[in-house]
Amino acid sequence: MEERDPMLSRAYREASQAEPPKPLDDRILTAARAAVAPKRRGRSRWFAWAIPLSTAAVLVLAVTLNLYMPRQAPQLEGLPAETPSLAMNDSAPQAKAEAEHIASSAQRELTSGAAAARPGPARAEEAAAPAVVTPGATPFPAQQATRQATPTAESRNAAAAGSVAVEASPTFGAAAKAQTAAPESARETGMIEADHAAVSGPEERVREIRRLLREGRAEEARKALQGLRRQYPEYPLPDDLKKP
Amino acid sequence: MDDPRTDEALMLAYRDGDAAAFETLYGRWRGPMYRYLAHQAAGQADELFQDVWMRVVRAREHYEVTARFATWLFRIAHNRLMDHYRAQGRNRVDLYDDPEDADTLAAPAQDTPPAMLERREAARHILAALATLPEPQREAFLLAEESGMSLEEIAAATGVGRETAKSRLRYALGRLRQALADLR
Image (cartoon, rainbow over all chains, first blue to last red; front, top):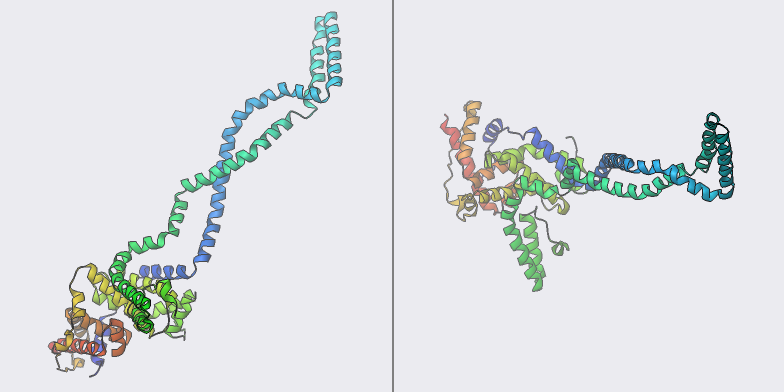
């Protein structure tokens, strides 16, 4: 019996020239490529997200600091009032004596004439001013306060930024979902459903092979395994049956 | 597509991480596989086609050369097709399980010269006749035509004995010849 009929073959080939659509080709090839490059893809995905994530973190940090700063402002305004006491502690006797001296001379000038008294307090202020400013205490505590506050605030904000960015970013959510998307995509194409239908066959065979192995019928088990591989080449073998 | 490697070598290369090997392999078999599915499950070929190739991708890890690649590939397609029939609750799977199968069916023996027919008309006619074939017989014909399988390979891909495959193919050829003869 001939297995081919050349005339029939030619007629069939002329009639049947269907090809898969291009988008279908693209989907399959993309999936096939992704399947053999999972690590590289995961790494590049991290790098792809590193810049947007760090940008989001910086933005959130900036906004948080911006909101935080106005609450700090009154403290900064109050600092000069506190600073002298700090300054006094540092250069205490000399500055105190100088201030008292200026104050007393001003008092003297005040008694000598009201018009002449005006520069007095000004001078007293000028003289006192270095006592306020010179120790450099004014900027320092503020800076120190900021510095002391910054690391904790920074870390808190960074953590918040991270979590906010993660939660707020829909694309990140999509990316996270994509990592577990393999079964999802399979479900989309109806593969899971189909697999359930197919699995009854091979699973029964696997149970049978295990039973044979338990009973020590190794040769029969080996043949059954070969049959399983032949009939269901796509079926993923359980680990315990992978050994030769 | 000028890769001189065999299908089996390409599949092994893909198993070992060579994505380009898969592309070559896919290029060789996309058409035959698509037509096989299109004739067997009209209207659902796209979904089945994608599923089959995804199964190939997933099965790559335990791929070994135990047969011709085409036999392995179309075995996967055959299994997917059976799943499809089961999911649809149709009785088509029973057709494949029928022990009597095509052996009991009389194959039209008349040989006609299709060369006398107009080609276009013959093409239309043959597709119509193909659609009327029972699935197992149609599958045997498609496997022979699209993948160039031998009777033994058709038997292996469809999970039947050589004689069953032979009788299915004979039946299909007979019916198709008859259809062409009717055109005269």
